[in-house]
Length: 171
Image (tube, rainbow, N blue to C red; front, side):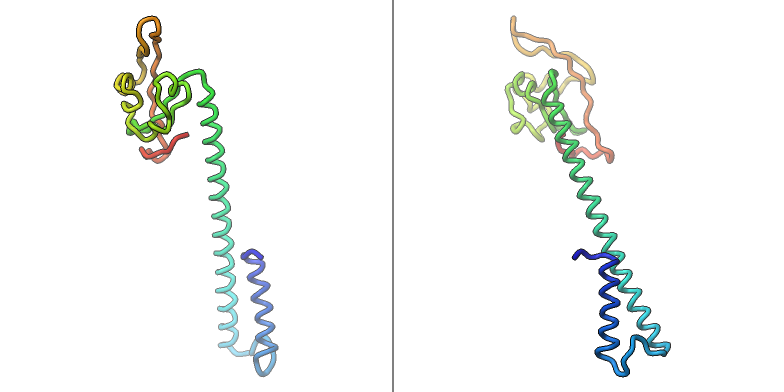
């Protein structure tokens, strides 16, 4: 039986009847004195307030849980989308620390996501990390040598949260 206003009121009324007809002399729910009326009214008011607060707390916890599940779902959708892209993707925060790299970047730069998460952008690759980190908003870098060389366009746009925190976790 979950808490809330309904169960609290039912319990309150049942206990009031049990007390009034089982433990008091003379038997009855309320003595016709001002003191008895005020005390009983205060008792009912306190119980109702506790029940309302309990119900509000449960509702807030339920909403927070639903929002957390939605955020996890959105993060997984984003992660799936980024991992399937034909473009290489590196997600960084405002401190230029790596939050995510997709499989194409892992292959091109010969690094694993697990190794570079949370590291500065320049840490991604010994050979190309400095070039990538030095890139401005939009630039090109050459990866490979000779006939294996390929030109890649680099677009930088740090991920910013609503509160502008630099401590985000990956997608």
